[in-house]
Structures are given as C-alpha cells and as structure tokens.
Length: 270
Image (cartoon, rainbow, N blue to C red; front, side, top):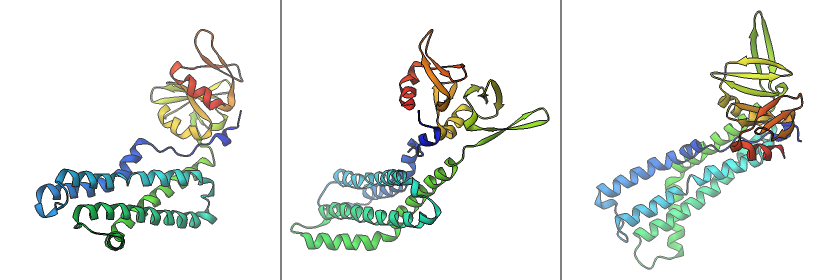
C-alpha cells in the first residue's frame, strides 16, 4: 500500500467551479439576448432571432470549457508550482490564454460573418473580422481570461502549499493542550458537531464536522468508509465481510464499511 504522501490528490474540480466559469459569459449573453429581443436593429439580417440567439449561445457556451482545461493542465503540472518556477507557469498559462482567446475570436468571427455579411465574403474578409474582433474585444476578454487563469493558479498553488504538511489539531484535556498530527490518527468518527479522532486506542474530540475534515484529510490518505467514518488508509490491515462489511485496522479495531462506499474504498486501497 502506498504511503499517504503518494496518495495526495489535486484539488478536485467541484460543481460550483462551473458556476464560476460560466458567470462572466452568462452576464454577457444575457445582455445580448435582451438587446436582440428588444431592439430590431440588433437582429441579424441573415437569420431569425431564434437562430441568432442559438449561435450566440453556442459561442458563449464554449467559454466554460476553457477554465476546465486550464484547471486540468495546472493540476497535471502542479508539482512545478514552486516559487522559482511560478513565473514560468504564469507565462505558460498566459500563452495558453492567448491561444484560447484567438480560437474563441475565430469562432465568433465565423458566427458574425454568417449572420451579418452579404453573400460572397471570403477568407480575406474572415481574417479581417478576426483581427478586428481581437482588437475590439482584447480588453474585455483578456480580463476574463487573465482573471480566470490567475484564480486557478492561486487555487492550485494554495493546494500545493497546504498539502505539503498535514494539519495539526489542538485538543484541550483539562489543563493540557494535546497536539494531534492528522497522519497519526487511525480513523475519525462523526459525533454530531464534533469529530472523534481515534489514535492508538485513545480518542480525542475535535470541534469540526466530518464533511469539513473529509475535504481536508483526503489529501493525506483518508477515505470515507461509512457516512460516519473516515479511515487512514495507511492503518488498514484488511477488509472483513462477517456480519456486515468492516475495515480492520492494524491495531485490531474495526470500522464499518457501507455497501455504497465499498467499491470506492477498495479502489483507494489499490
């Protein structure tokens, strides 16, 4: 079994990141949508309002894919996110942003030429449109692309910095304050608004929800085996299927393993 440090996973692309990616273009599309519906001069001569809106929606819908691609690329090369090379990563992201921006403008130019140009337009007209759009929209889209890449770089850098060292929790017991290194914990049990840290036969209550701990501990080899249990994979001895499913730890303690989480847990052990 690989040690926890080799199991560290990059920060996942959570569903709410799609909202972050789509918000700028959603506002821009809403503006175009309202203008086309309310003002006749905004409607394209070569297509009806429905087709025009559909083509613009297609153009704007391509944008959220770009932050996802940036996220995947940064995640793939996250090991390079150290101070001496961070400027190189920023330059690399800037180059990717420029390429994506150019591709986006090329698609927009094609859409606009189809909607507004008279028959007979050719390659020269198309290239002129791309150049014109690049100049006209450079400020707006560079801000959108630049801010998005910067946020992703910051988010992934934060993960790398925080994932290097496991968190330490302070637990008060009478007059003493005990420091508990997460990697020394065998498993964690949900106890209402608290979490019960089990370590070498002892248990310590920490005021933190299991859901919050799961997000923090998954980078250090902890996987949920049950809705009320997080297990340190480095402490697992075997899986037992008598009177239900259980995770047996090296100290002999057993932790419940639910059917719904069994396949994912077994995969994590590989």
